[in-house]
Image (cartoon, rainbow, N blue to C red; front, side, top):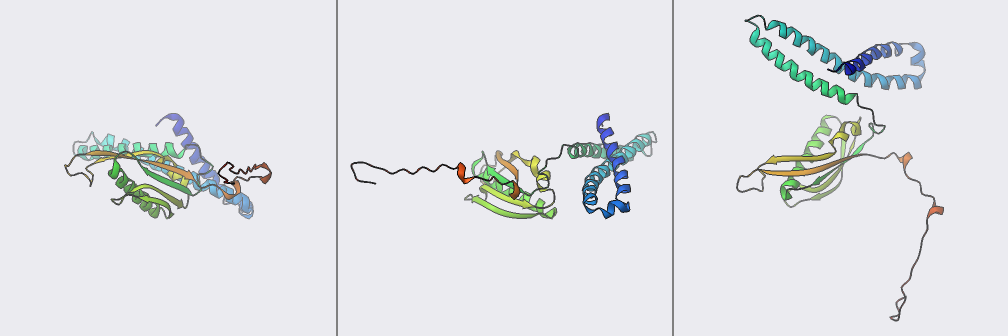
Amino acid sequence: MKPFLRQQLERYAQRLDELNFLLSREDIMSDMSQFLVLSREHNEVTAIAGRYARYRQREADLASAQEMQADPEMAEMAREEIAAAAAELAQLEDELQRMLLPKDPDDARPAFLEIRAGTGGDESALFAGDLLRMYTRYAATRGWKTELMSESPSELGGYKEVVLRIEGDHVYGDLRFESGGHRVQRVPATETQGRIHTSACTVAVLPEPDEAQAVQINPADLRIDTYRASGAGGQH
């Protein structure tokens, strides 16, 4: 792990101790607005500090396993533990880097998720259907609510286009990186020769706008022009 990243994570660990102390103070608990602000920060910091604590634990496990390699009787088990720890450390570091990305003010908002079939014809539409089921099931595991807003089914059971509204905790923040192109290489159900095809879909994730932020149009700014047809034919 890079030193500057570790320094940031150490500050989060220290901040967690500070927040635990602040939230135990009676004057903070009696001030509901300040208590709520600190509670929200506590939730965010706890998630990061918890993953960092796991990272440090796996670092210690890796160091212990490397020392065990000197013992012939423990060498095989040590190699297995080294491989497992190294893989988890790489995964945790990637996760921690994502968690430290600047927060989007819309992260906590519900989101609209649009899936469009791309290249691949009917197989691409089937892939869009697979993506829809994947996101729907993922939402269910997170306790999110989903609502099908619009759909354009294909003849073979997939979708040319489908829009899903997802509501729950931190929906847009967790799904916004899903935006972009998605592709799959497989033998499609529409293939009779057993050949592998590449199909693609595009996914767009947009935050649901706040009603308070809705665009207000002043009627005085509108210009309405009315026209009538005229001519020798008598159409007026």
